[in-house]
Image (cartoon, rainbow, N blue to C red):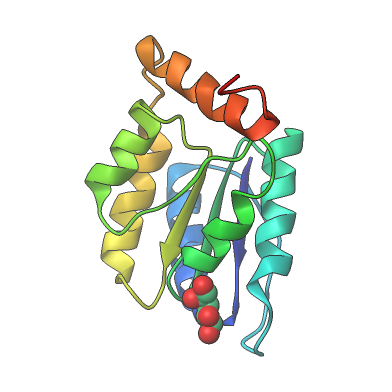
Length: 149
Ligand code: RB5
């Protein structure tokens, strides 16, 4: 299950991404917003991020004007590794090396075609593990205050 969320700046791009998820046969849960009225992105980013952190959703995609606000909020939730990506290479490496579990996109930064390409590669790329697991564990350690000692 993929968590989805956006603010008023990104409703159209969220619809494009749900189209891609449909094509890929992936189920999603949409945490809003559902309308063009101006809203506060932290509300929706937090709902999506908490669903990923709790295990209700496997991964999440959050979209606002730049992707930045959504990613800042998502990364405040323990267990979330949310990456803002504007090109596919970073999206792919964020999976291979960082085991990113949320993707943030900027609807005012990239077009629909690029967003779909980024999202597809991010969804299809596995985590490489190995030496990267140690580093991801360090991120978790920083989050919990256990690292550095
Ligand atoms: C909304 O105007 C805009 O601030 C928001 O979509 C996002 O870009 C915030 O980071």
